[in-house]
Length: 171
Image (cartoon, one colour):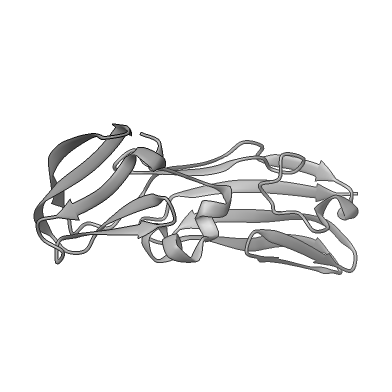
């Protein structure tokens, strides 16, 4: 539904599932294990208010990576190609996607978003640096200092060890 037609979201149990408005959007957050009924009022046409309810069950199992993939696992680029770009830029590795056990997809900037980081727990690491320089990755942005011939970026879930590897050759 468009956010403009959702007028309010109520929860029967704030301790289990909270409902908060953020701009025009409503965000429902599982707070603790249990069951709550969400009731939504919508107004698809002026003056025509409808109500929908749904019982939800909140699990105490945090999301973990069912799969972790990268669009391009091998990159051959000039050092300048990395300047100011995130590793998931379409000109570099492309989309990096984690799908959790519930089928929810987290992609690219989602992987480092402060409001999601504590839940999805995906990290980046640099290894196998060849050359006399150094490589770092911070919030998805790769910085190469000095002379580097190649390196590996490991994208990994700290909840269950799923990994995706990006092999980088620099010319």
